[in-house]
Image (cartoon, rainbow, N blue to C red; front, side, top):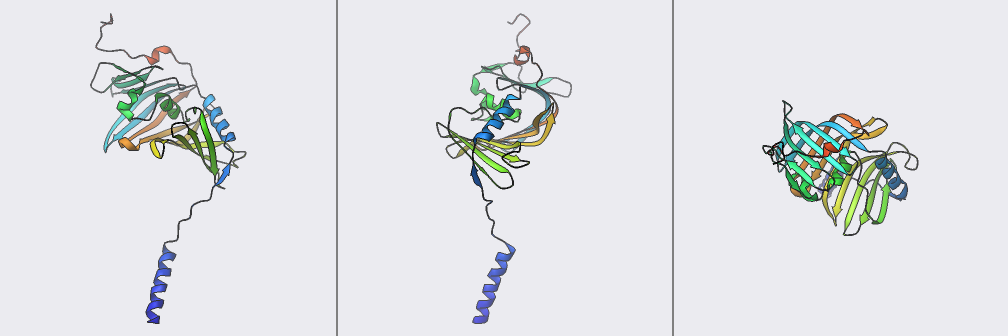
Length: 261
């Protein structure tokens, strides 16, 4: 009996040796103010993007890929995304002129004018046009009147910033520092928007490059868990902080003739 008990005890000890307990990395509370200022400065250093990208849209297991997409972002004020075919023809277009969303969907020539919530047809709820502009430029949106801010960091420079707003809204930003938190420059890893404990969407920023002195992710992945939807943006050519024409943020209805009738 003692021998059998010893064998069982030894077996259990062996199993724990093979599967060590996973311990959480300890985090320490640090002041949130400096990181908030760094994120604001990064946002202010950005004015515009003119880029060509590859976009993948995956919704409920079905994937559609657009190899050539023109993306124009004017701060957090205006946006244009237009997919082109192999012969240069426009396949679909989304324009936000600061007020309305203008859509020309695949296999349709008519332009549909919708309110600010028009993006829900494409990306589900939760992602406002201004937030999409911020995400496409590797920023987080300018927070509203947040009621509380907190930050926790590990010893290796990984930090989580929570900005809590009225209405049970929390904006969570994960960053990493190449040096000490007190002196290094943060790199945004992910941005998440929560209502209560439910994530409305999350964005992940990868392959950061320096272009014209501004750090920008060349791959952005946006997830909407509720809609089982993922949007992946892969930039392959980009100009930053160049002047933009107002004409870029208009969309012509191809069903109208030259007189507008």
